[in-house]
Length: 79
Image 1 (tube, rainbow, N blue to C red):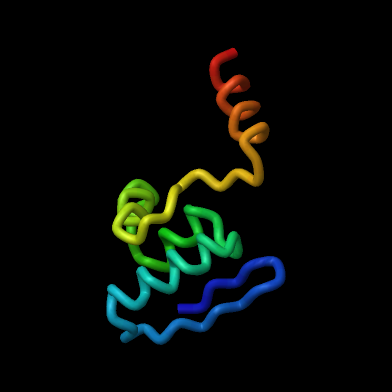
Image 2: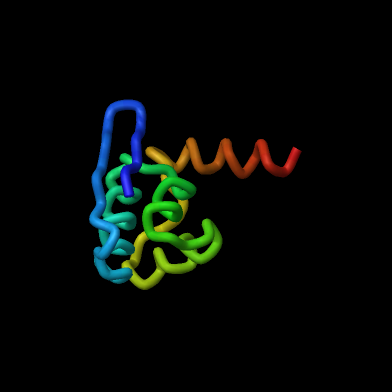
């Protein structure tokens, strides 16, 4: 599988075990190199299943740089 992003190409062996594929996807998501959708695709999971799996690794699906950014997102959602 080849996943091509704007500035990153990752060649993943087709026979990479599912657990290693998930760990790689989680690491790239946590490093903000992949979106949750891209990471889910890499892990061969639905986006919902990937977001759920993040909890196994203690990773939050919410990626904010500040509390203010998170609060602004919540406020925008409630309008």
